[in-house]
Image 1: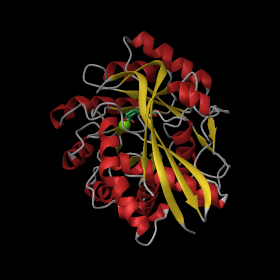
Image 2 (image 1 turned 90 degrees about the vertical axis):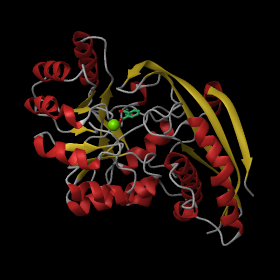
Image 3 (image 1 turned 180 degrees about the vertical axis):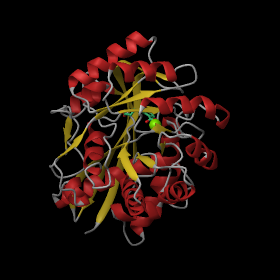
Length: 377
Ligand code: OSB
Ligand code: MG
C-alpha cells in the first residue's frame, strides 16, 4: 500500500450544546472543535479521511487548545509528514513515529493519525472494529453529568438519563460539590453504577475529606489530583477505599505503566485524543490488560466521527467498564453524522469501512466558523 497526503483541511466548528456542561474547570455552552479532513491518494485512488481533535478552545483540561493545535499542525506536524512521505512513505501506523521529534501536542497528533487511519481503512474497505479485531457489536453506554445549580436539579437530570437507559452515571465533582450530591444520588438510586470525576480539582490536603466518598459504593474516583501528581495519587489511593482512576495523568503507554506500578491507578480512563491517538490508546489497553488493570473509554464531547471510533475501541476485551460513550443527543441536538442512539443502554459499534460515517456536508458547513487548508504533497 502507498499512501500520499495531498492536503489537509481543518474545519473549525462551533456546535451548540443541548445544555451547558459544567466541570471543575469550566462551563461550556458550545463545543468549539477542530475536525480534520485529509485528502489522500491510496494506491493511486483519491480517498478522504476524517478525524477530530479532542482539544477545547482553552487550555483548561490539558495544555492543548484549538488555536495551538492549528499552529503546531501547520508549522511542524504537516511539514514532518510531508518530508516523511517524500522520503520512504507513510502509513497510519508510522505517523506517530514520524511526529515524535515534536514534544507533546498529543491531541494535534491524534487528530492527524485518526484522519490518516480513516483514509487507509476506507481504501482497504475495512471497519475500525475489524482492524482492531473487535468481535462485540455494541458497548454499554455511560453518561457524564455536569455540575448542577442544586441537588434537586441534579436528581432530576440523573433521573432523565436513567430513564433513557444509561447504564452508568458519572458525576462531575469539585470542592463544595462532592459529598452532598453523591450521597443524594446514591440514596435515590441504591443500585446504580456510580462514579465521580474531579478533573484535578483537589490536593492531597483534601485526602480526609475525599475518604467520605468511600461510603457511597462508587465504582471509582477519576483524577482527583493534578495531572503531574502521580505519586500523590498513589498516596491517596492507599487511604481511600474507592478505586483510583486516572484520566489527565495518563498521556502514554509509558505513563500508564508508571501509574499502574506505583499504585496510582487501579483503573484507567483511555481517551485516544489525550494519548496521541487510537494506536497509543490500544497500547495502553494492552499494557493495562497485561497488569489486570481495568480500562474504560473516556470522551471529549465527540461528534459522530470520534464517537464511532471510540465505540469500536471500547469493544476491545480489556474495556470492562462502561465508557463515556453516550448518544449524540447527550450533547447535541444535531450531530454532523447520522446520530448515535441508545439501544437498551448500548451504543452500536460501526461496521462500515473506516473509523466513522462521513459527516453530512451541509450540517458540517452550518457549524463551520472557519476552514484552513494546508497542502502537503
Ligand atoms: O474529564 O472526562 C473528562 C469532557 C471534557 C473534558 C474532560 C472530560 C469530559 C467528560 C465528558 O467527562 C465525556 C464525554 O461524554 O464526552
Ligand atoms: Mg475525566
